[in-house]
Amino acid sequence: MAHSASSTQPAARHAASADPSVGSLVQSAMADVSTLIRAEIELAKTEISRSAKKAGMSVALFAVAGVLMAFAGIYLFVTLAEFFTWLGLPRWVSYLIVTVGLLFVAAIAGFIGLRMLKKIDKPERTMESLRELPDVMHREEPGQRRRALPTVSNGRVERRSPDSYLV
Image 1 (cartoon, rainbow, N blue to C red):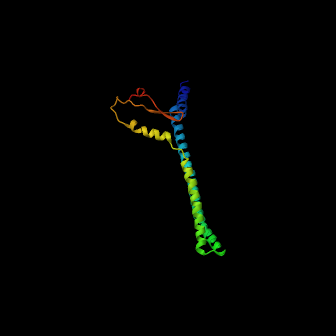
Image 2: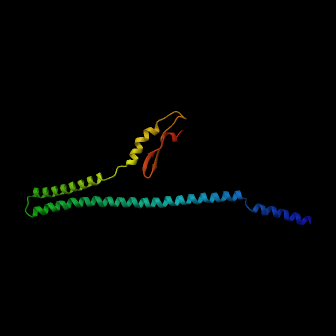
Image 3: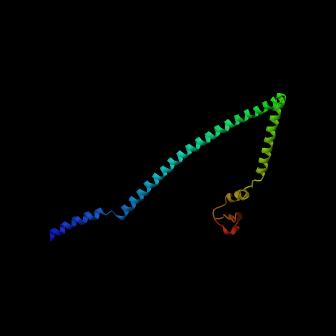
């Protein structure tokens, strides 16, 4: 019997050491989660850098297209002026007509842009909050600070009573 008891004792020790403790399981899980998060961040960086390169190339190609369209527009207007000359007008009159036409279209576009700009709403709440910033930033003795802190409710900035706040 003594022999069987001593033979089971090392087996029990081996079984206990084979089962990891809760602490080591948590540590292993945390390491796995950390590795997974790092891998996901690296994947996101790689995908974003690829997308950024494609977006940069697209913007560059749009810029090239815009420059070429501008040159094409210049040649179009020269062609239009030459067409007026072909119709029998003196060359300087033909170019003057094209220039005045371009200035007229530019003036209309500028006028429309100015009207749209005037319709933009001012950031009233932000401006009101910034006007109150010097009051909030005023330094007072510790324990003597009484300020009405602004609060935002229903999209409007409101001030609390000075007695509701003491630092």
